[in-house]
Length: 283
Length: 357
Image 1 (cartoon, each protein chain N blue to C red):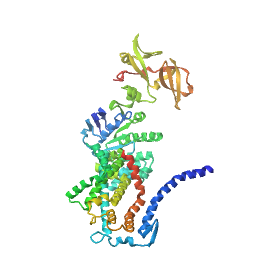
Image 2: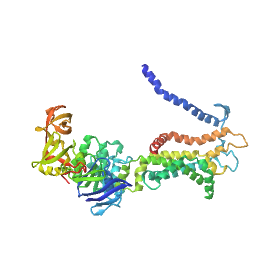
Image 3: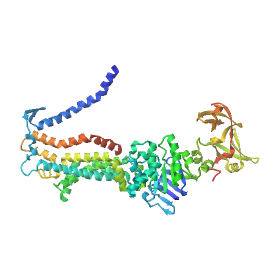
Image 4: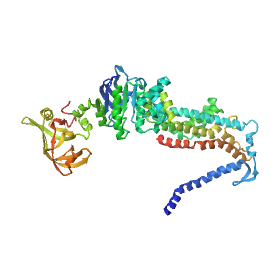
């Protein structure tokens, strides 16, 4: 009897520990929610009653004429994230397959270069990329921003996909070749379907990182232009002349967060597999 | 279809996988590649399949050189140790996949797949995914997939190694019966010498990328050309003793300490030329014999039907199979008789047989 009580305490200890460490995060989200509906907050409590004023950005832009509406900005963000998802998934899964399966000159060097690029601080490349984009007439365009973000995301995607492909048995592929499939048919009909969870996870990952991106859209678009994304839009509240309207900032932040939060809630199983699978095949 | 390997070689840089193999396989023949892991048997098989490209030599199907032809144009079926089923497809989709790739009309595809599945005894499992099948059922699906396009050549890569002992036994005879019924030329890779002995028309024994022997199971068993074959084929394995063979008074004698055997002239003559040689006896060619050479029981392993007895003459150990009713135990004095007509002799240095080369 006594032992079982002690056991129960011990087995619930990890949960208690986790619960405690999660509290500050939850409090943060809670404050975000409260604050976006209040004029002002004192700690976690709204002061001066609840209001919808902070959400007025949904109807008209708070930055005056010439600045795009929130819906245009959301569309921009969505386009960049979607573009990134499609390109990253397609190219990574082809490149990962080649790196995992084919033996070609420079394969090792390519792999280590990819790894270096993955770890490379992107800030140091900004000026160089700026010149490239301007030469290509892609500065201040959604396509330009999308391409740069794809470039930064690709090393991660390639390594991840290579890891997934490494875990597919050679025999299965040989069986398909002997059954009469071409290389491309093997890839598309046999291997890709068995890797569906991994690909879905990479897609979600790419989408979220595109959705949340700030540094690159900020650098390669003109501050208050038509090409702004949500993160850039959010930053505009931090003007130099007027005081920051924190209520509006939290409202926009919450607005940006909602799709991502929903995404995570429905896909957390898949996202777990990205870490498990990636770690296994990364070596 | 006949298969002909001529001087077939596979290298990866400096590493030699298979070296200069020459081998003819007759139409409808069942050939087993036998050898320990890493001997190059699977590499050879994959070259025949078209997965690996030979570094040198040619592979002929009938008179056609197929070196440069991809696996899809070779019309072969292959069964893998890991089954290699497509996990996202049902049994029906797995079996019909080769037909789907050949763009067979749908009704014909379903009919042929069903027929093969019925033949394999998995006709009622068509809608299941492979993960829901037992190992034996999965191997039947793999076999069905290999057979459905009516290949001219069947390749097996250790197909039974992942099955439990009883299932292995029944699948073994089933595969053999199927192969005889369908008359498809087959190559079967295994490291299990019992599988090789029971299934093969001819066995190709391989070691370190080289072909050691290519002959019928009885020939391989009774006339091992190398020490390796003698050691590898047969269970329990052959016994060996270092002896001096010499001729005295017209008879050939093999001697070592208290061991002295009279060897029939046809074998003794060849062994005597070398002086000190390795002599081999299979366990069944040694028996308890009141006229025999005195020795001592060193250990007894009950195998059920027989006892495997480890007996010592001087410091030489011999393993032999003994009737359990004799009740031998360690330390007992015994006398051993040798069936010298079945004695084998090997050169110590070259490890080649002195009798069969």
